[in-house]
Amino acid sequence: MTTDREDLLRELAPQVLAVLVRRYGDFDAAEDAVQEALIVAHRHWADGVPEHPLGWLVQAASRRMLDGYRSESSRREREVRFARAEPPAYDVVDRDDSLALLFMACHPVLTAPSAIALTLRAVGGLTTAEIAHAFLVPEPTMAQRISRAKRTLRDAGATFALPAEAERAERLPAVLRVLYLVFNEGYAASGGGDLQRVELSAEAIRLTRMLHRMLPVDGEVSALLALMLLVHARRAARVDADGRIVPLAEQDRTRWDHAQIDEGRNLLDGSMGSGVGEYRVQAAIAAMHDRATHADETDWPQILALYGLLERLTGSPVVTLNRAVATWMVHGADAGLAVVDEAATRLPADHPRLLLVRAHLVEQSGDVAAARDLFRRAADVATSRPERERLLLLAAHDPA
Image (tube, rainbow, N blue to C red):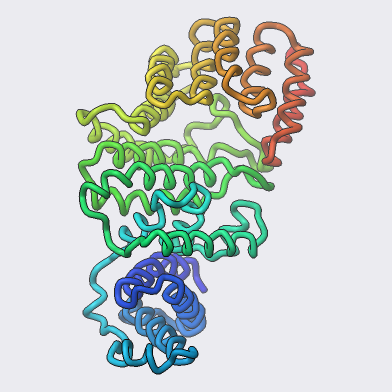
């Protein structure tokens, strides 16, 4: 199957699932039927995509779902309910309920890992095997996680419908958080041999675009999409030909996707005037980096001020570490180390980011031996192979 056809199936899968869940009210059975229909489409579309691909998939999935009901022990009782539920015609699948699926998958009763997995499965169209590979767990483990998530939703009485405006506003932060976590896992994979999982970042951007179309004036939705685009634009320059990490200061900025940067800046500009939120500040920081033609043109004083604001908004010790880096760039390594000490009171001693930032600043202050030890300790706890290799190189590097 061509990539275009695979992309089309991935895009249509959540829409088909939404139609079936809305029509029959059975999430588990609907998802199984959709997966079977995708397998059939994979085989039958080899010679060309049908004129109405969404309708084709809905009909195929509906037939399999009804066949499943008819074959169960309570066949007669269910057939009374579904006998008249013939597969919907093409003209009844003209609504896209993917956003209802997204809000359902990000229900507050679910933990973040469960919500991420269910979002990627139900709305992103990824297979269980693909999700398991991305998060470095066995496929049966991921399948169990997804099954538990669906049971949790059922037990909580979650209904398939786009929440009313008040509930939607209440649940929106969780939706944004899940999309942000999916993007981050793609941008900087938590483990394995690759620094980036571009397909996850791209999927997070696609889903956030979909949300932005529904809520075009929501400042944080616009800002999250802007943040993703401004950061994702650097992906081609983040690794060299051998797959090694290229730090931001050393990247070839001509390889950045400047069309994405322009789109991200426009979204960020459009989000202004509706309050200050976490994603808006992060997007502003990303825009400051992207605006610099060369690393030495970076407006570090402005970035330092933005990190101070972000720290007040989030209270995150990791943000404090980022503020330490900006402090170093503005006021020197010793001032940056003082901020690192602030963050250290709220982080484990072997936190990878804590060790890395302290190592860089200790090296800048002149204690090369201590910096090497810190780089080695950071390498010991790194879960990503490219990051571990980079840290080992830093530990062996002699700045003299």
